[in-house]
Image (tube, rainbow, N blue to C red):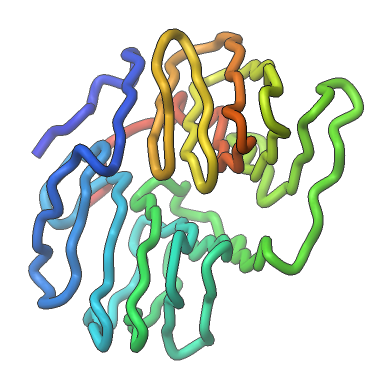
Amino acid sequence: MQLNADFSKRVALHADKIEWRSSPTPGVHRRMLDRIGDEVARATSIVRYDPDSLFPAHVHGGGEEFVVLDGVFQDEHGDYPAGTYVRNPPTSHHTPGSKPGCTILVKLWQFTPDDRCHVIIDTGRIGAVPHRDRPGVAVTPLFRDDREDVRLERWQASTAARIAWRGGAELFVLDGGFSEAGDRFRLHSWLRLPDDGETVATAGPNGAAVWIKTGHLRFAEPPRP
C-alpha cells in the first residue's frame, strides 16, 4: 500500500474525516495518515484500542514512536496516560493493549537500525518553557538528534506562531486548533510540510497544543526486509 507516499507534497488531513479501518487484531482500529507497505510498513497512523483489547507481542524491527491522545496505553513495562510520549527503538519489544481503551498517534519504521535511544515522557507532569524569540509560544522538548527534532508546543490564543524547518515537518493538533495557509486545523488534524521552509500558524481563540517533528522527512524510505 502507498498512501501519501510522496514526501515532496504538502498534506493536510483531519481525523474526523478519515474512516476507521480494522487491523488484523480484534479491537484495534486505525486511521491511516501516510503509509509505505502493508502490515510491515513505514507508517503514520492514529490507532484506537477498544477497552480490554490486546495486541500480540512483537519486536520493533524499525522502531516505534507514539503519543497517547486519550485513555491509558498499557504494556508489561507500565501504564501511559494521555499526554505521554514514547520512543521505542529497534530491537525493543512489548505486548501493548489497554484495559480502559485509548487512542495514540504512532509512527513505525522510521529509525536508523542502530538507534537504541528509548524515551518515555509524561508531558502532563513537566512544564513548557516560554520561547524567548517567539512570543506566545512555550515548548516542551521531547527528543532531538542529528536527524530530527521532536517537541510539544503550546500556543496562546490568537498567537501567530512562526515555524521554520529543514528536511520536512509534521504538526499534529493535541488540543485547540490553528489556521495555516488557508486551512483550519482542529483536534487531531495532521499537517505534513516538505523540504525546507517557513510558515505562520495562527492559534484559535482557545490556543493550541501541537506535537511537532522536523528534519526526518529527508530520510523517508520503505521498511528494510
